[in-house]
Image (cartoon, rainbow, N blue to C red):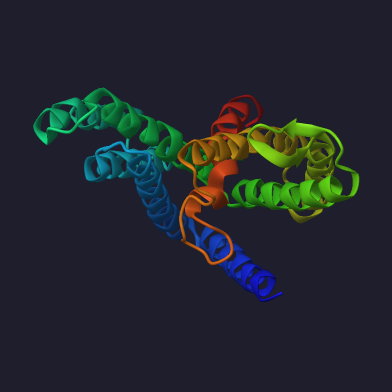
Length: 273
């Protein structure tokens, strides 16, 4: 009972801080998610260390943070798209840094350093393009779709749990996550679609077609994101990715769905917005 209360309190606090930062404005959103992306990437590198590898923690974090910052200002149209060129020399300096580290398994270390940037930093960076999108002929900061994205994830998690407990009979991916079921996935899609319908009244400028497609893709991609993170943890032999939040594990545990949902939503927006 005490553990459930702790989990609930921290969950509410987490959701409040997250939504509050998004609603307050672009810079509070950018600052918070820059911090989250940096801490999540560090968490990933810590997992790699527990697995016996030695990724470049600080140079990797610097490169990931640079990617997020450039994406923020490019999405905001404060700097041109070719500013990404400044990211390339930093990224390609990583193999040079590895020369001086004298660590075992340099190929594995370098691969995990780069994969961490792609797996963690890139999805968070793409959220900037969800936040800054065209509306009425101009590109500006619009928090509605960002809020919707997280609401779909939270709603689908609740729906998947309730439907899974009540109706779950057929395992979705038993080798990786024994508790996930097809019935839970269907329940998650249903609750996410219901949330999308409700949001059409809250954000009438967005159609149910857009929000509904977004909800379905978030659930599907988010489920795979959860499974991928579970696969990584299972291969290392840990239950949680970290201890960031009591009762909730680490940041990767909280944002595992976003890591795959964000790139999918970014590409969908190229067609809908």
